[in-house]
Length: 120
Image (cartoon, rainbow, N blue to C red; front, side, top):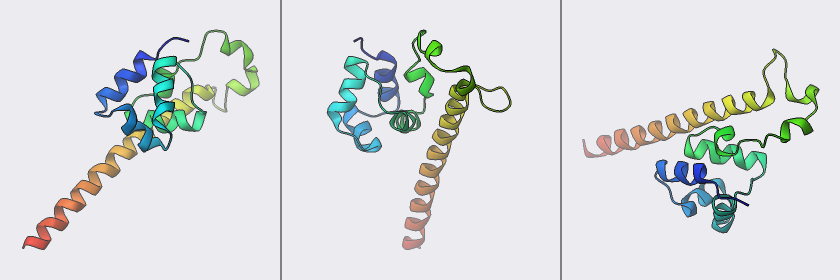
């Protein structure tokens, strides 16, 4: 299998190490190394967690092989409104990443405000 350079770059750009990502998405560090070095694909829920953690779309981190679209029935690939399920999941991943960043900012603001109130 080939390595996943996109995932490696996303982890680094998010300011994390593979071990930090593993802790954040609740998997073993060796598992993350397999994703990066061997190109393995995690379970879809874990892919979503990783995408949120590194702030990149799932489809960018683990694009579907060209042959995979042929194995998905047409009825399963499209949801109401004509959007593909992959696009819906990708957009949800982006929304979740934004919510994670906003939550982190809010927590930092609360800490800063709490510490200012304690010194006043």
